Image (cartoon, rainbow, N blue to C red; front, side, top):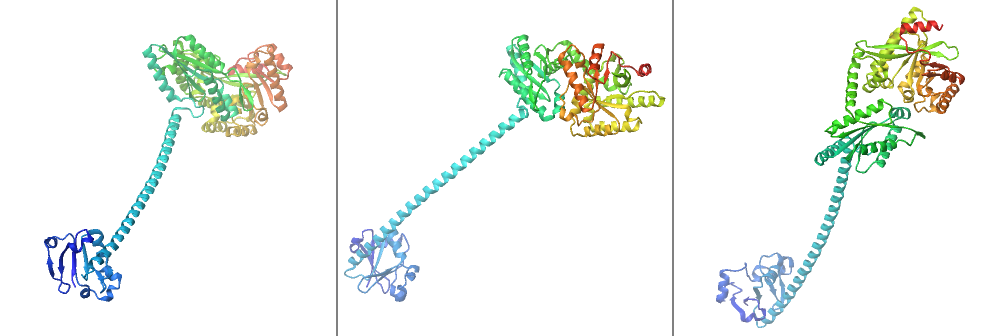
Length: 606
């Protein structure tokens, strides 16, 4: 029995393609042609051939595992030349190399057996190829699913990134808007207004045109804010901003400078007359009452105007000029407008100079007190006096309180002035009492700014403790707006404590604020002082007469006294006496007097 080596791809021609014979006993090459010789000299893959009976016993051949684990090419044939078993290495040679077929038992029908064997493994090869093709298809489908999954993930990531980007952009816009706009009214703030103003000036310079700026301040805003609270004050600012936006052009820039101050930028100004019309529109915005705190409240506005390049070359200079014009309006009646002029520059400079001098007035003994008597309307006797501060300037002479008190309140100097008035009054009362003079109670004015300052309140209490004066000899006067602004506050508790200690409390300028009648009864007060603006026109003005009469009746109903300020003639006195006013005060009886004159006046009225 020999082993036939067949070389080539044509299995059907295997017998004619034999290239050599090996002796199965000795494994020696019996015959070989040149093809085999060349192949043996440079084989394409390792090949070891052995006689199965010598290398693997029959029992091992029954085990497929043994066949697969051997490193030999194995084909087992029955004695009648039927295939019995092959191992994996043989399959590999068949399906991958397709070069060597080994047949054990070379007999007459070896061609038939070889064809049968080849056909069997060709079918196996087809099956394997089909399996590989199927696996490739599955791999392709898997790749498609993977690609779809990646596409879905990428799309989701893209959507999330896009959404986050939009959120960041929106947040950036919001932060940018907040940085450039007032949080309460939504109007441009100082920074944005300044940028637009600078840009407008550059355009005006290039085009040789004019730019105008208006400076607005709400009249008596503090009264409303103190009376009804900051929430109502904020609501007023919002409504005022809305009215201004509705009244002006879209091209006009309205900004909130802070507090109750607004600025308006008007570009492409053709004439002063056009700015006058803008000022008139602004004033008209406040003709209608504002619905606030469940009632209709009237408020006006003071306006100052300045033009580029006549009144300044920079935004800062122009705003300063407009502010000076507005302050002049405030000083001279409010509720109007005025253009800046050189005279106002002198006025503004004078105001600053007064502020500087006022700081030295206290330490240099330039302040002094005068006392205006209060008269009992029935007995015509002096029942009280109001201490009034005056300023004797070393160069300007005596300065009216109307000129320096607003500056003192604006700068905060009023705290020191108020404490000086209190101490000076206490010392004078103490002196009069020590002399045994029958001086009636002295009224001392207290500013709301003093009550806003804890240190100021502390200093007032120390002064009252250090300078011994009978409490009944002192009356404290606060304006209506001040006392209404301290509901349930420390200052209100302080006034209640002072009243219980024997000091009297009165509301000054009553009728000019916005008192709540339901709250009025709970206030720690003894007297309502009717503002002189209502007294000036009685008995000729029906509306003022009605107001004065109403105040008198309210005071009687609540158990308060009434004192009319600014009485200057007999007609006014007769009206007040007829309708039951308790006290009167004014030039008709006496001007503010110094200490010696007051002593003499009181002696004459005993």
